[in-house]
Length: 305
Ligand SMILES: C[S@@+](CC[C@H](N)C(=O)[O-])C[C@H]1O[C@@H](n2cnc3c(N)ncnc32)[C@H](O)[C@@H]1O
Image (cartoon, rainbow, N blue to C red; front, side):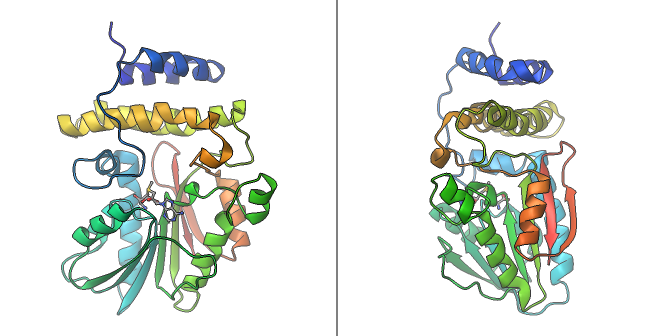
C-alpha cells in the first residue's frame, strides 16, 4: 500500500514518544518524492503554501482573535498608527480593515514579497510604510498597536548574553520585545504577541534528543494533528487540501530535521509559555491577558501594555 502523509501522521501520533523520531525518519524515506517543494516563509501570494497555511484552522484562529481585539482597541482612536513585525501574507489585515479604514500601517519584514502582498491588501485610506529590518540603534515610532505574530521565533536566543554564550550573532528576542514596549509607551498602546508553547531555542544543542522531541511535539503532535483534521474535515476545496497535505509534509514532518542543523541554521527558536512570560516581564510589559488561541495547545496570544 502506498504511504501517505495522513497515514504517517496517524501512525506517528499513536506511537510512544520515544519511538516517534526513528519512525519519522524511515517514514519520510518511504513517502513518494514530491514534485516541487516550497521553502518556508519565502512565497506569500495567491496559490502558495503560505496562503493555505493562513487558511488552516490553527492560523485562522489567531487572525480571528487578533482582529477582534484590534478593532476594539482602535475603535475610538483617530489617525491611528500600527506597527507589524513580520507580515506574512497580510491575512490579519484583510480581516481588520474595511474600505473606510484610515491610518498608518508600518511593516518590518525582510522578505520583499511580503511588502508587495501588503500593497494589494491595504485599502486606500491606510498609508503603508515598509521596512526590511529593524536596525539595532533605531528608535521605534510611537504607535497605538504593535503586532508580532509568529515572527519572534525566527530570532535566536532569549537575549544578547545567551547568544554570545552559544556563539550566535544577534541581540536575541528581548531586544525586539523592549523596542515593542518603547513603541507603545507614549500612546498608551497595546502589543499583541502570538507564539507557540514549545521550548526549542539555542539552549538545546544540535541533535539533542530533547530538542528533537520538542520539535515533534510542536510540528507533528500539535500542528500536524490540526492539519490532519483540516485535511479530513468538511471544509476546504481539493486544491486547499492538497496544499495542507504539502504543508503537513514539508513544514511539519520534514521540519523536525531542523533539529540536526547547526544552531545558526535552525531558523526556529521557540520558547514555552513560562519562558515567554519571563522575557515579557524583563522587557517591562504588564500582561493584560494570555490564552491559547486554538484547541491543540499550539499557539498562545499575549496582550501586553
Ligand atoms: C510565520 S510568518 C508570520 C506572518 C504573520 N505575522 C502571520 O501571523 O501570519 C513569519 C514572518 O516573519 C518574517 N520574518 C522572519 N524573520 C524576521 C525578522 N527578524 N524581523 C521581521 N520579520 C521577520 C518572515 O518573512 C515572515 O513574513
